[in-house]
Image (cartoon, rainbow, N blue to C red; front, side, top):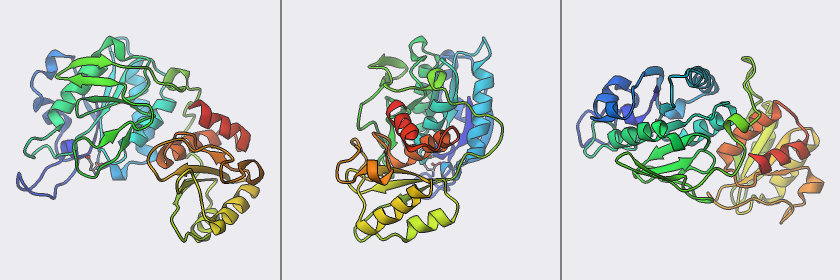
Length: 323
Ligand code: GLU
């Protein structure tokens, strides 16, 4: 188990308080709060960070990837569970899904209610995550997220609600499976390249290329896109309206960025569906890339890794169809 903090380890001042601090409790105390978990697996636990996941960073991602890869390489380790805040869990899950070269299960788990809350959801989520990681059928499915009795694929899952325990949804292609008090039902397999078959590896410590996300809206102009370019972004992900659309001023700025060699990916702010090429915008002429099914935050991760291999828009577009 690799612990990073989050609300699953969060403490309130009073049981019914709204406010709390993330990452207060140790991983050992979270394990102790899930009695019976020790019958599912022998657990070795270590802290990699103690943060709310709003502070997740490339450097923690790299530490997690290093630690997870080392653990998964040991013959006596069946799988890895990572405790994590829910805010950016889908990003860490997708990053690891692309860079961890292992067939063994890797499961991220968090909670919406702090560990001290009434009906805290952390202990059952943790119990189910350990059961999933220890399950022989969990391997080869890419990185998984377990919460609220559901098993999600890293590529599909997104946080969709600010506070509710059923916040995680896999809108496009559905669940990997269900897990109820450690009883597991797998439904399907991931559809795109991942983990051992991904082909992405983290080489050295050189930071990945900078990719910014710009959120579209009615009345959007070009200023924020121009600002990203001036700030040195090598890639832009546009959280477009609808099918990845932008107003005319923003299109002009994005097209200028693409002409200057910056990779421009059109994603969508809608939270579901496919962004296709050449629907209301001539991507071929403008030099844009369509995100296919990736939401903006996951499109950013794929683009950061993709740009470390190529800046050719056609090559990057193929990656959005492959991952
Ligand atoms: N900001 C917290 C985090 O992501 C809250 C979300 C949670 O863990 O449920 O760490």
